[in-house]
Length: 334
Image (cartoon, rainbow, N blue to C red):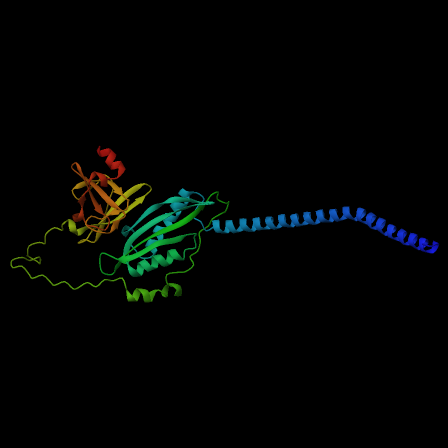
């Protein structure tokens, strides 16, 4: 290698060395800046995430408060009392008889962030009025749900039996809101209600009942003016139509068929030759039937206990065995 080549090699090596040193110095100076930029970007993303969560929290809180305004109360007792009062008012507004319906409190059910409470409602009335009741309840502005709805033919022509659960929620804990009465979405004379008139006109639940043959007149017997007065109505003319419970006080509503009047009885009153000792709300089989009964009145006649199912007459009372008695009655009888 001559002198010129040596000089050229030295120059090239120097340039390369300067470049390597420059890149090293640049990397040493810029790496901390890159790290700082990454930390700043990560902090900004975290800050934006916190702000987004904060906005979502306030939006959710506002939504929960809006929903809480549609609940019946902050506590189970308050919500149960208010919903029961409104439910009774809806029954009357629908044109139904309060004495024909029972409202049994449903057991509270714990769910995440709330408790589910409600009423088990069952009763009887004309199909038009039953549709009125279901329409009003389904479109109620309050937070609620209807479930387990059933419709069956009633005891008489033109009457329909219904049974359903009316459920609502009580928030736990309840947000601080100022409630006010809510306006109904629709009225009974609204076009939305009239849409169900075709269902009522068809009356698909009405059973076919053959017209009975009139009995032949008995000679010497007359119930007209100057004749023999008709005999007093028997126990088959009196029917247990309702077994309601309000504030822990059960009542027995008995319909006098010939007089078309309903009489109320309480615990300790005399009925069907015995004393009312208990109202049993357990779901049990009906004697001589495959059906189930949700409630019955229990009478004590002498040393024995008898029961009359809701919807049955006083003539349908049947004797209970020790296994059929409620716990409190069975313990007292020992």
